[in-house]
Image (tube, rainbow, N blue to C red; front, side):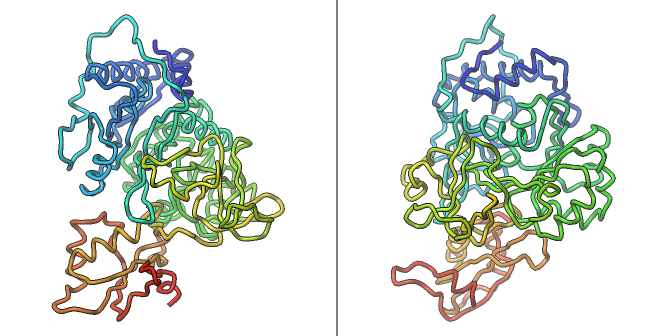
Length: 488
């Protein structure tokens, strides 16, 4: 039996395996993994990492696939003091190569489309001869457990370093607010490559509940069947998923109202009318909406029924361990009602990015700067009034305008700029719009650009609207003035 004092999440999983060893922890298709089996498989994966001479502090690249083997290796790395660099299996090759070149992993698992040797999850030897005891080095709880790459305003992905304390603190905060416990069964259709989905996995296992892994929310008939057969009590979703469920099933999901104890919504804004509809369909379910970033996971929460008189707020701090304030551009605290930058500090907030240069202007002392503009009212509720950063929030996926612009220029456009516009279909919240400089000969058509971008970008990064213009506004220093384009 392992000892992992550095990881409160692992300690809780171990405790559950002792108290309720036969309880199902994970469901993936026909696989039903009990807590005792989960611990045994984590230990087996840790032995495998050791057999490959992967040592504490080493970094491994893990494709976050909805497979139990990913879960085993993910927690085995934590147990062994190895750093997980979690990647999206659907990411373009260029992004994966950038991440690989940046972190220089000693091994890669489940990753496809990058240079170098990669081990499939099926290629891991889970049957190494077990030692009488798994001896592991002591690891500090403040050491890095995960590196999650997000998108920066410059276009280059930023590696967010999260410690064992950070990820445990986040899970404890969320469970405390939502009220998750060992009686909960959650269906997880969110990607595990993002902090929302991976956080839900940690929350349920830390609480001693059961997590049911499904590919995504696309097959609603299969989703509803799982919810009924597994007696699901909760799930998490982004607003784009809710739009999908609402459009395809109408009010049918309301039949689970008495069964669902909680729904967590996050990663993008949810329209007021959808909040009202959720409250109508789920009158006794805790409808929890979070605000947060990978760097400061779920800093604020609001619960729709409890905050029915103020549905435009993004909430209050998730726990007493988290502080949020409004600071001006010099780092001075602003009074209630005055707009400034939302800044956060607490047990789940990253201490740094992976690359030192990415930390420039990321903090005011120990306050993390979110880049979002807003204010606080006299009752302690926070409100967003704009976004200082220029990322485009496509259904919860953060998209960098600079990444799209670079790809478009590579296809023969002299200059361009991308901004966020409301999704014409009302599903994704925001989508990219491209402004193209109408200069040059033999310019590609929009259809040709779309075709070329399909090989360079993810589908949600490809602009939905296009406009040819005679000038791309830039500042005297050469920076694109995207706000002028949005205002126009």
